[in-house]
Length: 156
Image (cartoon, rainbow, N blue to C red):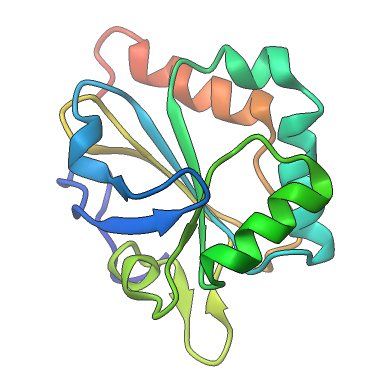
């Protein structure tokens, strides 16, 4: 990801409207937060990604982190996507791409790219992953492994 916070940097604060109401990152200090940037509602890979989290509630529920999806569609589009597939992750509307750009998860002409950013309890970026072509995504097990690394002694 280009031009976004690196591991160890303070995560840029933001507030976006979403399917569960407004979400402000700074309101979640003291929690781990997983930001799931994704290209679009109802696209094949995005649908598989979010349905995989829905279909693995035990693994996903045991992550011990607040998790949100972020893309450039409207809250209405997100709500329809959530309802159509019974999704369990709140989806945030970054309609002008400001948050995706701040996190380096935006490409010219393409828009929001598929990426994961994990922010720790102090608001510091501790993990970044980008799917270069957007055809793969991190599973609940991948997210668990990244979170487990944060708890490893000496890991910063």
